[in-house]
Image: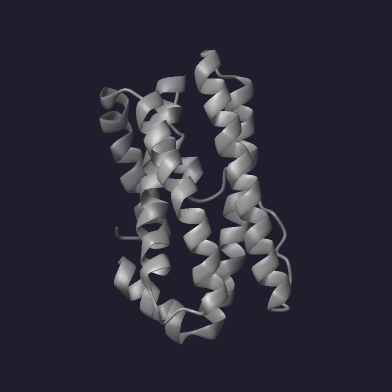
Amino acid sequence: MNTQEWLNKVLTDPEYKIHWLKRQFIGEVTAADRIYKLASACPIPKFKKVLLKIASDELQHSLWVLDLLENRDIPIPQIESPEDRYWKVILDDADSFDKTAAAGYHAEHMRLVRIRALADCTKIDDDIRYVFKKILPDEEFHEKAFALMASNKAIQEMAKNHEAGLELLGLEI
C-alpha cells in the first residue's frame, strides 16, 4: 500500500486508524529500547550521545501516542518482541555498527514519509495531526543523525534488507 492509499485508509476506516495508532505506540516503545541497546554497545563516544538522545526522543514519542490512545479510550496494546516484522529482516545482515546505523537511517526515512503525510493532512483528526507534527522534527533529526553515523556504502548495502522489510509489511514508499 503506498502512502496515499494508507492515508486514505487511516482517514476512512476507524478500525484501521485504531490498529495503526496501536502499532505506532508499539513501534515507538520498541525503537527506544532498540536504540538504547545500540547506544550501550556503541564504539564511538560522540555517536553514543546522539543515540541516547534519539532513544529519549522515541520514548517521548511513545508517551505522546499513549496519550492519544488513552484520550480515545483505546486499549493499550501489549508490546511485542522488538525483532518482529520489519526489524528481523532488516537487521539480518547488520554485523557492524555501520550497517546497524544504516538500517536506522532506512527506518527513519521510511517513517518520515508517513509522518509528513499526517502532519500535512488537514483532514486527519486534530489530536493526531498535533502529535505527529511534534514528532516530525525529531524524526527528521534522527534520519540525518543515522545518515551521518553510517557510511554511504553501508546505506547502499542495507537497502536490499530495507526493501525486503517493506515488502514483508506490504508498504510502498
